[in-house]
Image 1 (cartoon, one colour):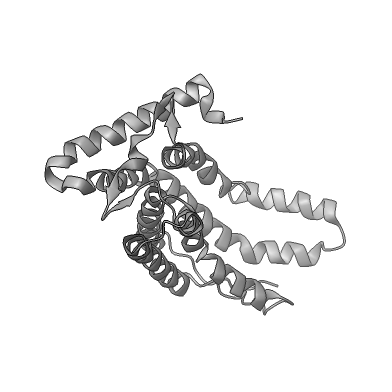
Image 2: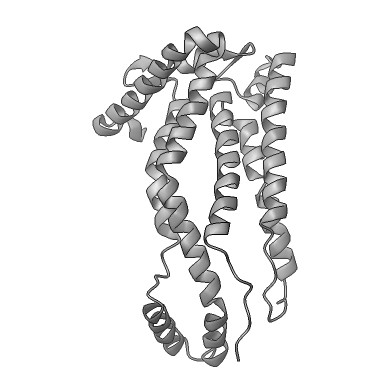
Amino acid sequence: MDLFSFPPLSTTLDSAYAVLMGLAALLQPITGGASAAVAVVILTLLVRTVLIPTGVAQAKADQTRARMAPKLQVLQRRHKNDRECLQRETMKLYADEKASPFAGCAPVLIQAPVVGVIYALFLHTAIAGHPNDLLTERVFGVPLGASLIGSLGGGSLSLPVIVVFGVVILLIVAVAEITRRLFRPEPTASGSTPGSEGILRLVGVLQFGTAVAAVFVPLAAGLYLLVTVAWTLAQRLILRRRFPIEPSIPQT
């Protein structure tokens, strides 16, 4: 069952669709046939702007988590054979630090409904009982509703499809590589644990998951992903300066 068939969600999705198509209509005299694609980019920027407070909250949570990490390691060593005591002392530490163990989850939960509506705009061929005309709009001859894997499987793969998706995916990969290099997780100062190097490599590989997703989603969603990862990188760079994470110093 499609959740967006329920009246409240259907109305919300239809409103978002009206805003997006209205924006495309306003841009049409300036951007011509690419107006819908430009509207997707602008809508993405607007959404990311609205979600800036969640990014700030996440940066603060990361800073707090890094500050508390050495103290948590001490508790884990001290009470490794007493799980109940470890849990009690851990909660006391969070209370003393005026922090919450769930602080990093809140920004994700807040973003989920907004991102869900945006993705639905790009994935549903019909919205509130009418066709989703956004998906029939084209950029450089490629429909915004087309996907690379769908074109390949349907036998409609063409040079414009290869070029447009190739540019989008390569740009996402480039941003992912920059993000991986700038925000590479470091092993804890107390020494590496068994399997820690493998975990760090896995975290690096996961940076490229968005590029893989772009192969399967419609072009409109691919543009959304590209703008989102670029925005996220810039935002993280700015917030890391505002909320720096100091290297963990192991405590005894």
